[in-house]
Amino acid sequence: MSARRSAKSRAVSRASPSPPSSPRPLASTGDEIGAAALGRRVADSLRVLRRDRHLSLDQLAAASGVSRAALSQIEGSRTNPTLSLLWKIAVGLGVPFHTLLGTEMSSKPQVLRAGDAPPMRNKDGRLESSLLSPAGANQSVDVYQLKFLPKGVHRSEPHGKGTTETLIVLTGALRIVVGNEANDLAPGDSIFFHADVPHVYENRSSHETRCIDIISYHRG
Image (cartoon, rainbow, N blue to C red; front, side, top):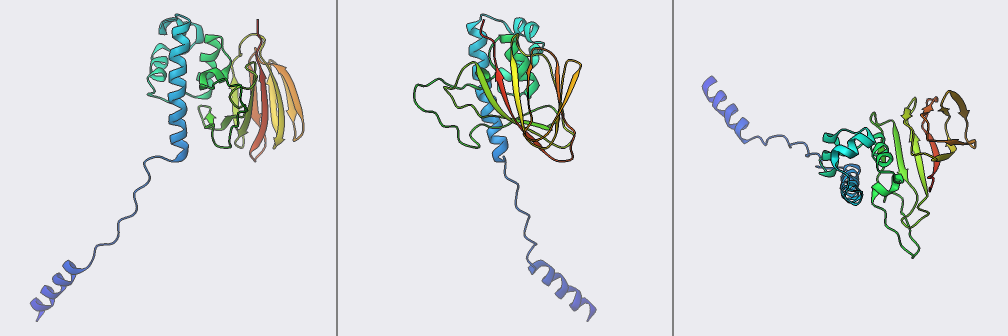
């Protein structure tokens, strides 16, 4: 009797359907796809800009402070550079930041849809920067939306000589330190400063802070 029950139990066990497997995660999120596309545009732009200026990787590394290995990885689309790295490269090349993003000039009205420009992030991911200027806009001015996570801090090295920023706080609270001078901003406040010196952005609130940042480049 016991042997028959055991055999029946084994048969039921073999016949029982296995539990459904959990769905596989998608290979890439939309955000990852956008970052990859941005990385390819930066790679293409960097190769062209470096070639036009007859700069070797070693020469650009010396001018930008970005290692030769990192530059090679960026040109080969083997990495998605951080916001800080891109700024260093732009300064080393002597070009406006948006030039690295591969924007194209056009005489026709240009529309940049929400979500068309993938956000760029700093190293710890607590700052997200999105280009708002459509292609063909003033080549001496960039307009960005900045989003800082709670307690997010971004330390920016000097931009190119003569570069200025006008920043307007939309939500949250932001402290801007330019050189040794600190300024606390609330929603609706704005600040203008010369960005060719070290400067720091700090979200001092426990909520997300959003800003509009207008960057103007000196044309010598």
